[in-house]
Length: 72
Image (spheres, rainbow, N blue to C red):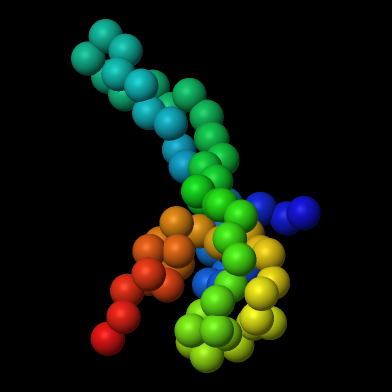
């Protein structure tokens, strides 16, 4: 299972870690940051918006889950 949102396609990203050491910044390296993915069942409203299969269990980011709960 990949670490990617099935609805919006959000995936991991690289972030540069900077630590302050004796008044100067020390670039200590890179760190990979992952999206907050949760298992969710898609409802019929989500199918209309994102075009995925109804009743399917997918991994979605919390931003998409929050957007699924909102109605117009």
